[in-house]
Length: 141
Image (cartoon, rainbow, N blue to C red):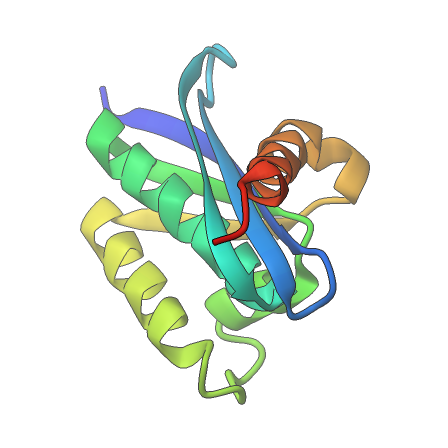
């Protein structure tokens, strides 16, 4: 039986561009069991770069968990539509991130993208905000 997972991914930027972070959660699609969490600081960048970074972290974690089927849930309409092939990727800074995400998706096999309201993405949103908070707390050099 192949492992089906749900990725909840999010990213944010305070200032856009500004201090940015991402979060991702991987759950077993059948049981809801938490399989992995990932988060990180990105320095100063845009919200959309942070959103893609969350997706990439989630796809990497799903691959590491041995997933064969993935539903990626995000509250970023832009990322969901671009990764689904319905919207063009116009901004040059997003193209390499979309390409990296697409490569990971090919390794996983079946990946679908679903837009969800922010309230249904609370765990990943919390991780992204914690990453931004940690970055803000770092002493300036």
